[in-house]
Length: 425
Image 1 (cartoon, rainbow, N blue to C red):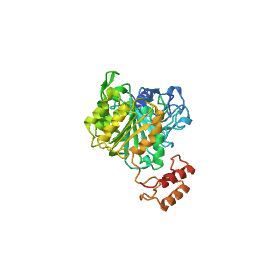
Image 2: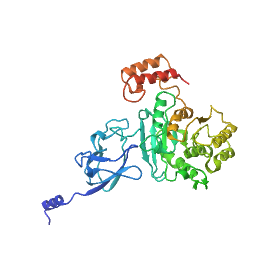
Image 3: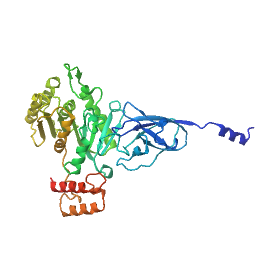
Image 4: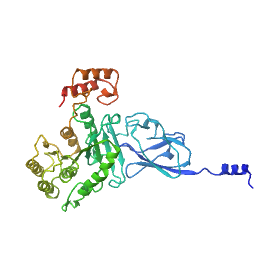
């Protein structure tokens, strides 16, 4: 019979059970390698070469760690130093991540922000990305959340946009960015538009197919637009509604070039996006089929606002003007629920789309019930609001940090005065 001491010695001599823990990490847009994990299991070395994550095809980073089973660990992600350690969504410190390995596991994690603001990123405000396996084979999606989202329980309209790589960050755009984040931050802070969520959808290798409802045999592509929009409606939109606070029935769509074409088509062929924006739209595609389709379809009851624009240096204005005539014949009123802009000298580029974007948003998005200067929320701008601003400014109340930079200075006063002078609609 084995003695108890023999059994104990046998246990002590047995190797500790191992666990393969895979960390799959979604990082801020514009992040470039390296990305490391530092933790209690490797001496908290922020730049350990053995703990550098591998970039994945979908933009995430991954590493598999061989760890003792059942032994708790603490860790954080870095870009190689403690000066580039991960932070919270607003740049705040976060506690160490913790986990107890239990066999072979995969953790899906997200880094909200880096301590140094990113590796050359031009992102402003709260912009993150995620992938959803069921949506277009895990296509990357960008999400802009408005100032104050984290401190509110409000629900927001959602603007869905195409070509997500080109919307927020020059690091991911091949020809500059739309500056969607900068435009939204400025207009929301100034009280010109209500707070919105913007969802950017990356384009894929079949951009021509996804952004067109018909095939153009002359070009040799196209025709998967209905399937693409159905995926946005049936897969992505429910996922956005689960992750974020969205206003039911307040979904809009915008895009440029072929993205403008599919946005206009979405407004006429689907009843899920009540306001659409077609920037420099490729109405010429397949013999200007969009013009004929809109004319035959008639004005959709669900389409409450329609915006289109085109630069004079982009090519023929004929299909664009034809689409304008169709919209007006259907009862759209220019300047009210319809706007058609011809931009003098503008070429087909993100640079000019970024210039036009603020006016696009002013037309597309409602102003707030009053504006940000209405600090007592009584739909009046008066001495009470001024008093609240002054007292909040002296107390460094985040509610009166009007430019959302964490500093209470002349810029906040200027934004407040601008909003106050703007009055209530």
